[in-house]
Length: 140
Image (cartoon, rainbow, N blue to C red; front, side, top):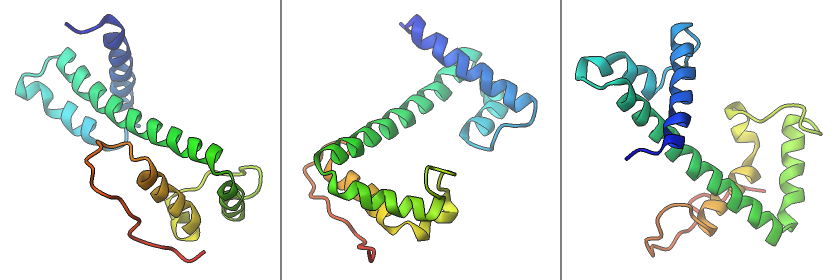
């Protein structure tokens, strides 16, 4: 049985996304393609809502959990935080004048290393027992 709370959250996502599709502001993604053909395949509104909501939930949980692990690493190993901040400030301006985007990727090698080390150090994925190592060592 589906919980009432989950149904309400998914319904809110569904309604917001439906409005953005109607007014043409939705970015192309799985949901835009799925919603455009779901009726043809017999998916009712609740099924559509739960498919899209489950994907949002799965993606947001893993991202949030991995971000929390990197923050925990900053608390345990604070020496790298100043270096990461210096690199971000050099690219995006001090005091977060803007957020970095993919166009900044090549100018943020230390941030790339922090992201990869966070995944290696405490992977958010299933613990398989397979050793993890960095595959790229950027020059810093």
